[in-house]
Length: 295
Image 1: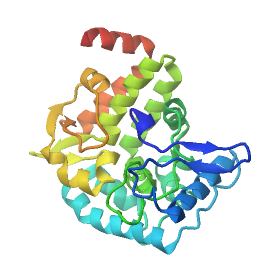
Image 2: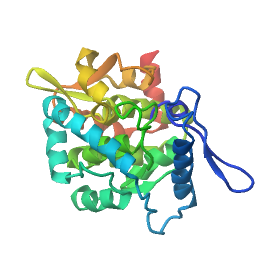
Image 3: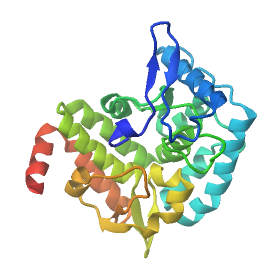
């Protein structure tokens, strides 16, 4: 999620209870009243949902299923070429459908037996502390909308394709799911907003845009890369740096273009060891030490 206020269109509810997703003028769906109404309806489903109740069904349309199919078909060969072995093995074991948009409870039914994670709905941007903190309880908050059908290979904000194709396939990998849980526990120990932002940037440059070396080739495991056709095709053109927690926690990034700097673990084992050590010990004091190191 990173510097999250730019990642999602705000969701508001007026005094009469009507829900609106506030799309920017540059959003592909801004001038499409049908798409805007659909986004509002899906946001209302999540806003009206209460913990313990059944997950609301989105009842996806043929057009939405078509968007999912297009993206799944485009990503399949790119994953075979560019994804790391751990991601590919997790993807195969999870078995997400390629022909329809899965409901969140369908994703949970596939995922929970593997690593214990399950999905819950959110209307738009979840506060960083809520989003990351939920990982300690094996919960991933996901939106339910899809990108505009006029541009199936592009989205200005993470949609269910990103949340599921990117993150659920990660979460089916036991090593990566364990890192997610450690992120949640680190949030539980962290009180300062600056420390939380530092943690979120490390998450961005690893779980969202992370790379590992396999042999002499960089392979992607980050959800932000592997849920995007363009990012998956382009990530090898980025400047690949060794893992550097201080740099990752302080480096600014621009979500509106392909990431020019990525950080690569020497292997999946190396990555897991570094991140487990970091997230299992991170708190406000650790953040202060790292900031002093960066100064």
